Every structure is written in C-alpha cells, then in structure tokens.
Image (cartoon, rainbow, N blue to C red; front, side):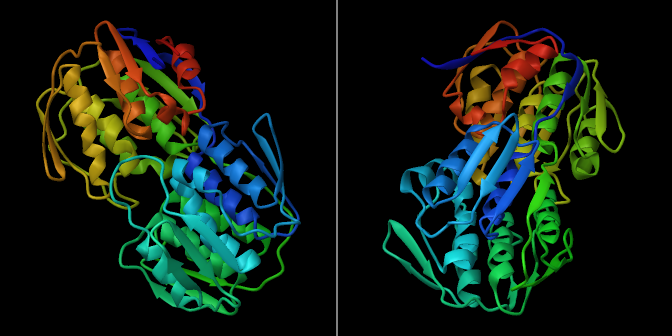
Length: 415
C-alpha cells in the first residue's frame, strides 16, 4: 500500500522557503494560451496539478519546457479546443480553460471536472456567464461544448463570488469585443495575481481585489515573464504543523498580506505569530486554545482550503471549537479520519464541533482529498506513535515535497 508515513512527537523548528502557489499558477497557465507566442513563468511548483495542466496544454498544441521551477510555454500553434477527458477527471482546474479556448480558437470541448471529492461544486455559474458573452453551450451528460464565433463584452453579476467563474470570465473577456464588467467578483489573491499577469500581457484590467472588475478586450497581447507568488495554503499548513508539535518556525517567500485571516486565527489559538511583508514566524508551546467559532467564507474571510488543517490543529485544542464550512460541504468528511486517531469531533450538516484532546495517536488513515491529506499530516506530526496516510497521491497534487519540507524542520516523515 502506498502511504505517507509520519512518526509523531518531534517539534518542528527552523526556516523554510515556501513553494509557488498552485491556485495561482494554474489560471496563469490557462491565460498564456491567449497569447500567440512565448510566456515564461518562474517559481512554478513541481506538483501533480501542474504536470496535469502541462499534459492538457501539450494536447492542444502548446510547446512546453519545464525545468528547475521555470516553465516556458509557446502557444503559437494552438488550434484544438478539445481538452483530454482523462485529464479533466483528474483536475478540476482544467475547467478554467473554457474561457481561454473560447477566446483563442472559438471552441472548447471538455467533460465535467474531477479532482477532489469535497462537495458538489457546480459549474453552472461558469456556463451562464459564458453564454452571456455570446457562447453557445451544449451538454450531453458527458461532454460540454462551448462555441463562439464572436465573444462580446457585457455586464455580468455573479450569484456567488466564485473563484473559478471569475477566472473563466476574465480569460474570455480578454478576447471579447468591448468592455466586460464582473460584479460580485471573487476577491481572492489568486484573482489579483491573474489580473496582474493579464495587465503585464497588455490587458487593461481594473478592480482586482474588489467586488467589481473591469476588463477591456481585443487588445494586442505581448510576451510576458511572470513570477508565481508563494503558496499561502502550503504556508498555513506548515504553520499548523508547527503549532501542533509545539514548534518554532520561520517561513519565507510568502506574501503575508494574503494570509491575514489565517494568521489572526493562529493568534486566537494561542500561538505567538509575527510577520513581515514576505515572511512569517510562529512559536507554539503546544497549549492550543479552542476557537469558539471559525467560519469559512470568500476572501478576505477565512479560506476553505485552510479549514482542514485547522480542524486537525483544533483537535489538540483546550476546549470546544465550532467550525462552520460554507463553501465546500464535503471538507467535513475529514472528521471521520481524525476520529480514528482519537479526535472528538461531531459533525452536523455544515458544522463540526471539535472537543480538543491533549494527545492523538498514530494509526492508519486515508487521504480523501488534497487538503484533508495535508491536514492528516498536521495531525500526525503531533500524534503519539506512527501514522500511515493512505492514498497520499492527493497531497502531491498541491504540495511539492511535504516530506522533505517537514524533515528539514525536524519532522520524521517519509513515503
């Protein structure tokens, strides 16, 4: 059985540079399809989702060289708009290529996206918005086909500030005639970074980081080099692991203003947290305090991607914590795996009641999605004895080298 093995009980201490952001690089890679030339990205994480996106882009005609975290993409000869079904099933982020391919070749064919089983995550917001821009959408239960001989800028108000839908609209708007305005747009850092990349390509974009984004389409694009920002979720995961072990770490290469809600949550847990613009330090005496109420919400609220690592950390808390998941209901499934380690967690609908324990114990658990897998590693480094995490491939979708990273901080972890 393929497992990630963790011997708990070793405080994490030291300094670590954080990898590039998964949630930033994937939409930027999709955006590069719009330019009929070469785009270079640096600080690209060497993770499974990036390799999956590379495979998709190569299938539609993009020439790619990827070495030492530097990704060079030549999209001069893109002609196909059909995304390989097997890759779509492995990675939900492939859906963002709908907008880019509509803009580049006037057609996009894909199937319903896969990835992690963390909830329904419907894509109707994406499709509705693209239809408003002039695309014709047909579905047969297996494939989705979007066709547009001419995309038109328009005013779109999202029913929910969906990150994926905002990304798709942005990419389609680059090639659309006129101006596109997105109201109730997602404000996440990954949207800001995508807008910054588009601006560097020559696209007039205003309002990144606010609820209204304005894009002027049909502009001449230019060759671009762009550095991917550090991954705020990976940084938060490692801070949680340090807190669970009574450790002391300093993380660099991360833009901390993007992590404000997470860093404040660590302080509420009783951790000593300080930060500069591009580094953060945490010290924990392992006396984790319960958090009366932790609710996920769109940025700038507490991110759903950090809910799982915090559930693992709060399982060690002193008292009762209530977690409410408002984005992806399936994330609360993690509770069942933590209970195998001795956690006391009761789940009802979208809320989890976590009664902290002084110790968890190592055992065999299963990663059921990317963030849950990483959260089990957080629980495991603080647990007594050996933990074996089955199906660790999920973790490799977003964490370049979680074993090496935690070992460099003194953890005992190996594949």
